[in-house]
Amino acid sequence: MLRSTSCRILLSVQPSIAPVDRRLERAQQHIDGLHSEMAKAFVEYGTYDVSHECDVQTREHAFWLNVHETPDPIRWGVLIGDSVHQSRAALDNLAYQLSLITTNGRHVGGTAFPILDHPDRWAEVFPPTSAKAGQFTSRSGEHKLRKVPPLAKDMIKSLQPSNGKAGMNRFAEGPQTDDRIRRSLLILEQFWNMDKHRVPATAITAGFLAPPDTSGIAFRGTSVLGGVPVTFGYKLPFADRTKLVSWTPLDPFGVVPMEGEFRPFVLFEEGGPGDDQSVRGTLQTCLNDVRAVVDRFRKFF
Image (tube, rainbow, N blue to C red):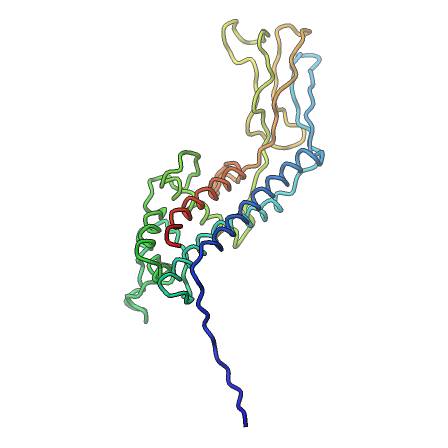
């Protein structure tokens, strides 16, 4: 009689940077798709228009925002989460592929790319009261990288946000230094954790990149040589009947230029990981910095 038996075959996998690159490519596609959707929402769908009006009594000229339909920020939040996931997963895939170098292609569970904001968490161990006392916790950097080549592990450790300067939680543009990379990794980690529980929130604001050309025009309430002739805002509410820019010429019936460069801005919520910064700019900078991290490890493959 033949007896059926079950067996488990462990397949060995060759280390490769290709899965990481595919993640990065997908993250870029999500960012490009998000930008395209936001542009269409404002440009193609007739979401808003801007009108010029003049008060017949005060002779104040103003541009007003007229909103016909408010875009859906929740959908944008979902697309943001897609980009964040692929960027963050690329780093975990990198750590996993590095571990295959020392394990001869064998799978090791729990391998991941740590992003830690406190130095004590790198070598965190279970307390004396635990059955695993003295062993590295599963969230520690030492545990996640236990099968990664020592040099690669040291490189990852050096890029931890916990090694950065004060103010690491604030996103800012600048040269692609190690501290900027650490900041991007921290923000990416914060967005990644947020996206597990809620959709990243965005805010639509309105403003003029450049006010109307008012050269050669005298204004009320200003001196001949100075003053602030034009009042205009940058981060104004994207709401119907928002006054975007206003000015009052000294000659109430003179010719007044009526051209200015208006643009809506999509920003992350204030106080969150993106902290009132451009959605596309923040995501793109984070992805660029993840690419820079990955490039440092190509020599291992």
